[in-house]
Length: 137
Figure 1 (cartoon, rainbow, N blue to C red):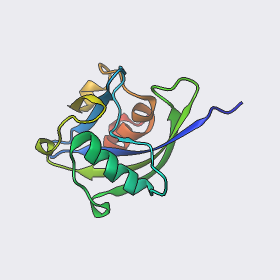
Figure 2: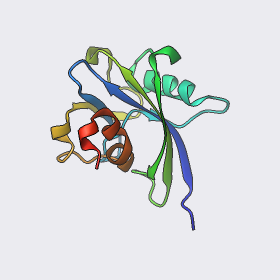
Figure 3: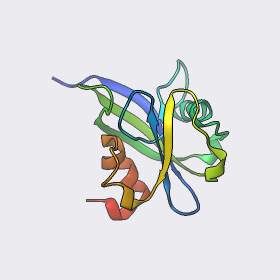
């Protein structure tokens, strides 16, 4: 039996030091790329722009986003579900983001942090290897 799908848009956000932004939502333990679920009628890019504004106070436009593709992994916080993510990359100044909405914390990580940080399957399997090709298996 196939697991139910949760559709999301996710961002691989890098700064000038090649660090990647990950966030942890309140009441959860795993870090993941920022983003979220679409509202009715939104495109994946529109979803991501809205979510980044709500979660991080980040003001981006579609021209700031580079599509990376669609990726599927086990959901980090919904057991028995898969996450289907439309992913985009963007580069920003790390001083422009602050924790808002349902987020508990954010971190700028390097490849050295990957082994020590509880990360969502989508981040480990697909999104961080896009940011840092050396992590590809």
